[in-house]
Image (cartoon, rainbow, N blue to C red):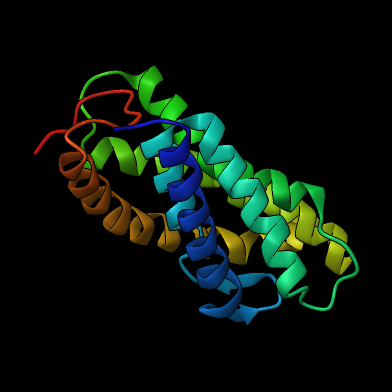
Length: 180
């Protein structure tokens, strides 16, 4: 059931959904804080297809999204692109490292750690370079928004992942079994 065509088609679909959710179905609270659900398809790509495909979906969705809607900037920031790639790469690797079944709590912890690396460190550093604002000044509002995002992402990713995993009959990348 799974093969190169499965990963290509589903990766492209998740990438398109991520671009739409990130660039067109989100809004800015502050210049450094965007509220939206663009990372959700990237997390799902990593969990369903593995860290390599998840990282590719994340990086390519950022690059494609930048080409479609630049936000007024001349070129994509490599740190932000790396943050998008980390969102697809880190969750399956961290879940495998933790071992055991995938539960909501484990996924919440993994997404929290991923967002600390991708959202707080890499993205904030990239925004600091783009906006010319000191890293420390951007960090506090982003800590608040990231903590809210992590919980919201977990509430969406976990049930979708469990449902897709069961529909595919386990024929997808999974570091561990899921608890139902």
